[in-house]
Image (cartoon, rainbow, N blue to C red; front, side):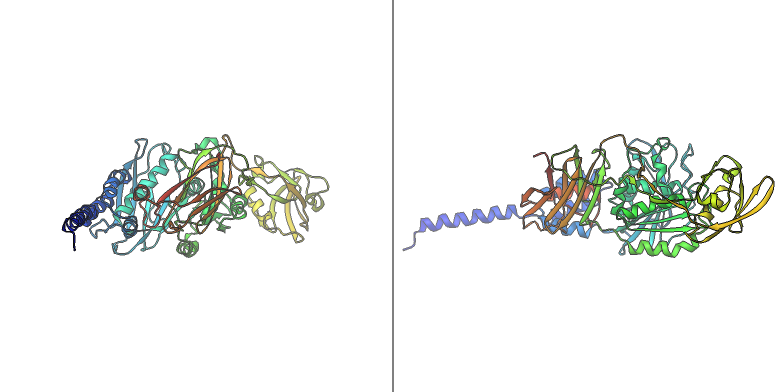
Length: 531
């Protein structure tokens, strides 16, 4: 016999459960509206304010990831050709910029971005955005070219410009269908130096760095006002295409070469081209353009690299590289002994035995000749004026040194000198002394810094640290399996092992900040090395 009272209770319970389920089911229309508002925000601050509405919409984590990867719908009704923009950076300074959009821009396609930093930043007033030499190094019709402005109050190597470039990129990504993994930075002269600064301080948005006739060591001078300290090891995270000129009156290639090669020795992917007969200009662009464009095409960004190395002396800025954030500095027990990337080891160098004074006779007169040296055996005397090297006139010390740089050990050399008003010819073999030179510091150091090297293997992260007490790992659903435990080993010690729960709130937090469809983070894993 069926108990009717029991059936009534069951029926009431089922109805209540159905009603509760109906109330708990996410509203698809509400989710759509919340995401439309989030993706339609004007900037990261506005997006962050709209993130809570997305979370409250009840969207699932997987659905949120899929929507963010898909991104916004782009309008075809946007500016094409030469366009102008402006905004204020965090310090209230107005920054103007010019950008060029292909006239055949198609919102269903993704376009790479080229950010080109100009030279001559010592001017007192911002340069006219209409006169930035947009056509000086013509690019391709497959990219959006961006020309920011810098001047004495806002140099490429200051925080205001990092903020400026971030705002420009964010605005473009919200308006045009940009390929986030093909955003590269190039620059000429001071602009090339600015590119080095970005590589040492702020790598996350960039796919590659292409400094042209620039000089990274300019950043070592206190007079230029670079923001903070430079860490060459940070540059190994991204590829480099470098061009310097052999007859450059400011940054000659033979002076720049050891520093560029230093990046290679640190493990960087570096291409170094020398234009031997060029001065401080870009007349060589037609010769280099094809290699430049091929390099850009062949080096897209990996938004979630398995390996990272980052060093910083501060944690309020310049403390992030992709999925690594350095939170606290300071030594801890058992930390790793990481090599100093700031030491330039020149190793063995050749000493011909000639000493010159650059302030006398354009640096061509022998101030001294080392007794018994190669120069002495060839017949050079102190006071000799060198006028030709290997049959070619050398009107300046730069010309003379450029020729001497081409000598190979054991080969014959020829010098034409003036001594006591008469010309003489000297010849002999190039057999210089080998001199072991000590390593030298490239950039000054004033504050303690911290460094973290990461290597990810599936859900296992191995970290080597020095001078870091705490850091955060940003975990992406593209690289971590949240169904499985995550393990972090720091300096040989397991500092975390367990499941990490991803959340929509964290996902939206970083999506608002990065505005990047390919670099999403669902969880933050804080690692405290003092425990």
